[in-house]
Amino acid sequence: MTDAGSTAAGAAYRGVRAAVVGTGLIGGSILLRLRDAGLDVTGWDPDPTTRDQARERGVAVPETVEAAVAGRELVFLCGPLPTLPATLSTVATASGPDCVLTDVGSTKAEVAAAAARLGLLHRFVPGHPMAGAEFAGLAAAGPTLLDGAAWVLCPGPATAPFRWLTGLLLAVFGARVVPLAAAEHDRAAALASHVPHLLAGALAGATGRAAAPDAVLALAAGSFRDGTRVAATPAARTANLLLGNRDEVLRELAGVRAYLDELVEALRSDDRERLSARYDEAGAIRGLLSDREYTTQVREFPVGADYTAEVGWLREVGAAGGYLGGCQLRAGRVRYTAGLPRPSRA
Image 1 (cartoon, rainbow, N blue to C red):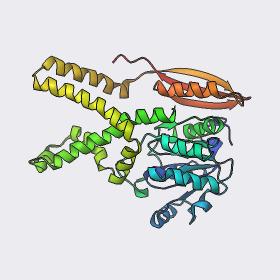
Image 2: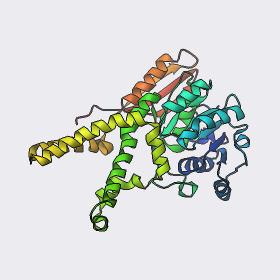
Image 3: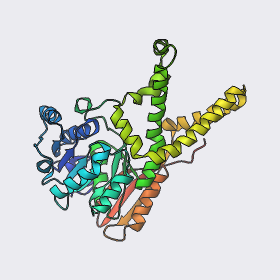
Image 4: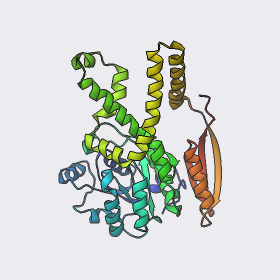
């Protein structure tokens, strides 16, 4: 493995042998970026037509997944969420014992549990890039889709693969690596990503059942378009992410419904002051997406020692809304640079 951050951004990873299994929107975008960054990358997809499309875009694509991952140092698992545990088992068997494995699934607890059952926690790092589009397939993929994305990685009991993968994502994708425990990721993703799919589907679906849907669509402007964008996501993909995190989605949805009930009651009772107060509260949170300020924190840990303190600190960074912007290995120590949000005034 190449030391994270040991040379100029990306250069340390040129020539790394990587593979991407599942070359749809996210997997295809990872594949194309790795190729453009100079890695020795292969791709594979269960669909023959998709494999041909990848070859047309200049990527080596063997006919079997086993051939695609053989001799690789890193494999991204990017297939549909329900397939990931079985794919993890197949890829682990076909790849070398030192090959780092990661995934991009929108929920983490199930695949992390599968890795534990398979005895792969020493080389599997659960991951989830928080980016995408409502479109699907390799035709919609592009090498810049994940530029600067928040990219969740779940540090486990063996942190060497986590450190190396963090360095690669920082250098090649310009990612903001968010270290979280798998369960913490699923709780946060429920409200940040999964519930919005429910709300978008409800708004778009209700429009289709309205008395005059064509008139509604004729008037639809930015608020409607932004609020319903992910309703255009392929239905099977949406169902996978919602069912894959069902309990957390339902729990967070209850909070959304409670807030909506407050708005409805203020509207019904003609309570302008209360209605304005709730929107002031909501607007302050929305403003943090663009106006949030961060402070820098640097921490070092010895390599090869007890990883408990390191993993604990990493998870604290993610749980606090922070991210990793640097990861360097030098003289037997790992040095992290983290961005931590200033306390919210909302």
